[in-house]
Length: 125
Length: 125
Image 1 (tube, rainbow over the protein chains, first blue to last red):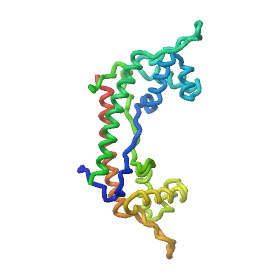
Image 2 (cartoon, rainbow over the protein chains, first blue to last red):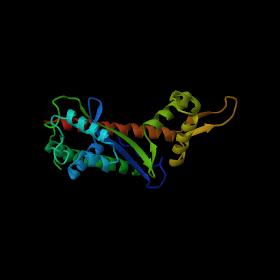
Image 3 (cartoon, rainbow over the protein chains, first blue to last red):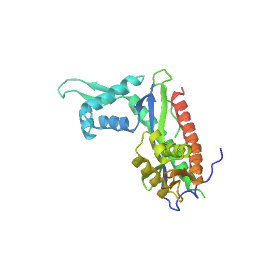
Image 4 (cartoon, rainbow over the protein chains, first blue to last red):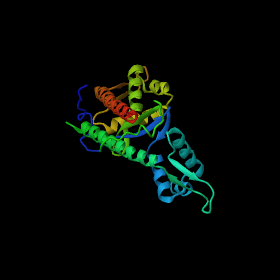
C-alpha cells in the first residue's frame, strides 16, 4: 500500500511521535523484554537476586517469579541461584542470559529504527 | 549489527513470538491508536457518541475525553458533535478521521510485518 501523507491532518508542529512497546512471548505469556533485562543486569552487577530486586523496588517474590519464568521458558537457565553458604548464597547470570541480552539489544535497535522511520513518515509533507 | 542466532537459547518449540504495541503521541501524550480507531468506527456506524461509548463499555465522559483529545490534537476535528435537535443531537466523523484511520491501518500493517520478521528471526537456526 502506498504511504499516504497525513501531514494535512496534523498540526504544523513537530510534536508527533510514533511510540511503541516490544517484548518476546512464549506460549502466549510475556517471556523477555526490558524488565527482565534490567533484573538480569542488576543480578550481574550485585551478584544477588535480593539486592537486584531491592534496586528495582521489587519484592523478592516477584523477582524470583521472573527468574523462574526465564529459567523454565528458555532451553537453559538464565540465572543460577546459589543457596546457603557463608555469604547466604548469591546469584549469577549465565552465558545464555548474556547472549539473550545482546540479542534483545539488537532487536530493540531495529525497533527504534522502525519507530524513527514511522515518525519521519507522519511528518512528511 | 549482524543478526545473531538465539535458537540454541530457546526451547525447540514454535511457541515464541515477538509482540508489541504501537501508537502515535502528540507532545508526549497518547494521541492515536487502536482505541480511538474503534471509537471512531463505532461513532460512524451508530451515528452517536453515546451509543458508541456503550458498545465499548466505556463511560460517555471517557469517550468525550478521547474525542476532545482527537479534535484538539489534530489540525481539524475528527468528530462533529451535533447538540440538541429532535433526535437529541448525534455525532459524525469527518473525512480527516477517515483518512487517519486509513493511514493507521497501513502503519499497523507495517508493524505486523516487523513483528513477523522478528518472530521468524528468533526461530532461525
